[in-house]
Length: 180
Image (tube, rainbow, N blue to C red; front, side, top):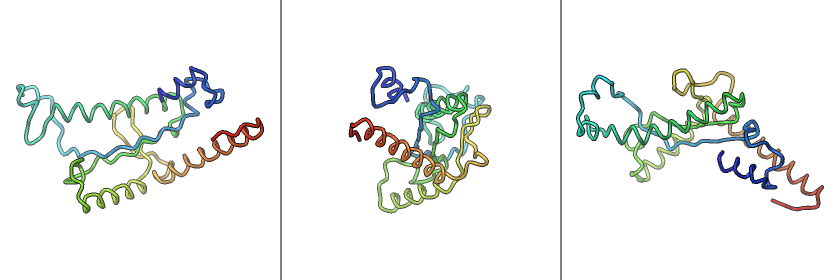
């Protein structure tokens, strides 16, 4: 979004007259790599008693590392969700993420054939799940009534992009400029 906005500010001709903050014309697809199912969150009461070592390692987890890696991804999603919802173009932002991975599928280090096939199936299953969006009051991602599945939302994005491409090609032909 920042890169496109910068191109608009510098009046790049590839970006027809669009205002820099006209996010209603942006389509943003955010594909997550998946994350492990959170079985138990750390409570403030428990973590207040941890020393330095407790923040580095607790019950088989690494709280400090987990917090920084997960929360940076969450903050990007929250920022985009707030922006698109505030501008009433929330259907132009689609986040597809599985936060229920368990076992080897939640690891980025296991590239066995079985694990890769399992991940392909998880991706196929994600397509069938309902479109979800960040609830700005709770911070949780929740299914959105009436917006169909992720697959249907991707198809809608593809149609919009195809129509835009067709329109640009027609305009280029009218102007005598062939640009792809």
